[in-house]
Length: 265
Image (cartoon, rainbow, N blue to C red):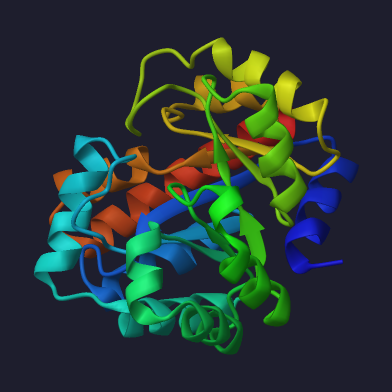
């Protein structure tokens, strides 16, 4: 049983969904991202998802792309990402990375999995890696005790859902909206349908992301999913607030608001 599974089980025993927060490594700076992520974990977040900066992020909306651009401008590389993983995982809560396949392949599949393990990371979300082309990744993640998370969308066929769920070891990432991430005024009701479809294939936890950004949306998603993933809402605060200490305080407050809603749900 991994720390990731323990976290979902603990939340389930408390009749609530898990709160997962996303932030790109190196945004607004490497050390700044560490401080923000630590604040998130101290303010009710259960799991941290650290974004690996990549120049062609197909799944990300304009808000996250802006953050990733800043991170790339800061020359944030995989070495920096592993430093962030190491520092944030010291708090004892699950730390995952979210990476497009190209940076992992360029760095070295075995090397990436090994270094994640050494840094204290426990899982990797690979949004653009098809499970049927992931044998090398499966081998290395199994070898290094790294949980795999694949992404599915409302357009995914039953065959695709079956293939994904057979190869996932952490949780299934359900993309609540077709297309890119970003804050939305209403969470797609297709998310609930998608979660129900996934549950026919697996007993693993299902977390919903892409478009969840308000307490009301967090509350809605928590009624049918095991985990709620929030990213753009945090990124927007940092983009709008140049003073790091003020953005840390605002993010801490937002995390507390989300956590309170989940515990009341």
